[in-house]
Length: 413
Image (cartoon, rainbow, N blue to C red; front, side, top):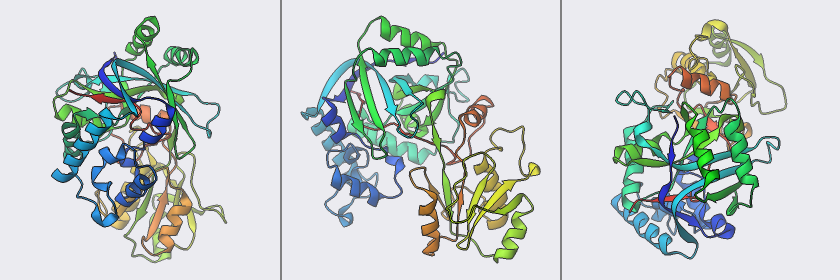
């Protein structure tokens, strides 16, 4: 049973113009602190000034150290200002609808139900009855950083994106009916052209029906925000901010790689690759971004190659090992480059907000030795890994579009 509880005290934008000024991408969607600094120059009211306080400065040279006492104090002060700001208002016992209208998927409707998920429902060795299933490992240091921010601000600003299977479509129908019953309370347009809408749900039969339908789901699978949920659990909080979306409405984008290690000649490289892949030239005159499983792009500065994994390159019965990111990690990075740890600093992970042209350009400058483009993981693959209680390969799922920070915030005091 998947449970969401109302947020006792929620801080929300007063209207759509306020939402536009406040909301932002999540902290982990950026390639560097400079990108965050530059966004804050354009959007100074963004909640990034609170979620990434060290990057809110007059100049790049004036930025603070991430997680430092000075940065956390700045976050605390800015959150206090936001609570008193004319841009926000407080809502008691809040549950909400969250819709993302994606112009690149006009036939798909993505609507979820938001509130507080219970930390005691996270599936762990200590809570084997848990119904919230993680599929990525949690790094304690990263979770601690988010926990420190929650403590400093006495608030939860970033939400956790969860997928539920909704096999009979009942939850999707109820969510759509609720959204269509009236206009959204506020909305904001994201940089990628997606519109994000929020409805604050009043207590009553409609809200109860949505919670009942969600409770019929046996599990919720964490799509984005493992460390945000872990931070709440680390602090001993009863709940964390979460949105549950039916899986059928969710989308995934590629999660690519840039690599600094490459010392073989092109001929020996292709010979080594051919042991585990069929190696072909990718379509000419294009930067190759595969779109279907088991098609992998590789750019070495000379040409794009298309790699097709051979059947013996992975275990077809292991849903996690079937993911192309796992195949590349084992058969290319580990065996050919000696990079056995996915966290190795020679690997740079590039999310779906950057295209294959961006990767090629970074290789052409000489900053990186080669690039790998991977097809997006499918929702079927994602769910299969969760059902087998396995872990997704690190940095393999880039859910797109992503939920925004700052549209609904949970106050803790």
